[in-house]
Image (cartoon, rainbow, N blue to C red; front, side, top):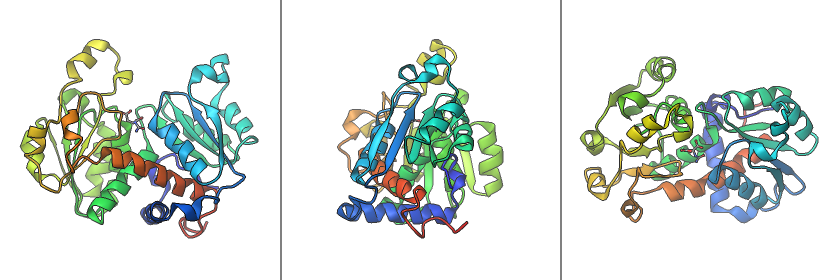
Length: 311
Ligand code: NCD
């Protein structure tokens, strides 16, 4: 049985085939409308979410399956002190597959060890968010036809932003990727990502403070929200929250075919005036999240032969 806890749980080839399946579903959704008839997805969300939880639910429903779950730790038995291990053992008898979001790094990994059904990490603390990465990669692939050769600017909270960590881990497996890491000093990418992921990959990378200066070089600009809930004090958050605001004026320094991505939710970091620009792809990216999750559910339930390598 396979799980998706870390982006590297799938090989590059498996990831590519999963994205191809997502594109097929996107083109012909009716072909998949009953693919999961009789199956149940459990959404175990110990931390707030709009897109991720609802897109998982939408994905399962669009496959003909059903959904159960909870959307906050307070409404689950976690508030009575139940462990993740016990919860997943029990859920294994209630559902066929589970998506878990948790404020503690590593919680979905622990769940997978005790689970009898496939577990998907829907975001664990400031650590990883592999299904957002699938949505990001689908958007990049649909825009450029391929992932290799991309110059990507990752901007904002690179320290706590789990979507950034997962995306970098996946992108290093392609050719000629050029990373431009745009953040304030305090929100730089964690050193393990630099030392263990980017540097060994041999890809070119640099860290900069200023967004305007690098804008003309980028193919993709990946904006992120400053992750308020992961700060130790509110003062630091208030000081850093508006470090970057993408306006139309700044966007116009970029290439004509630049794509602006954002995992959402947005706070202040993209001015609403940018939304109407054809380069703004974040709502389309969120829509793609449903199709990659449909592809992932089918794959982990063993209903999409050929996506995963044979064991
Ligand atoms: C992201 C997350 O939860 O990490 N949201 C999402 O799943 N699309 C990004 C964020 O919360 O800033």
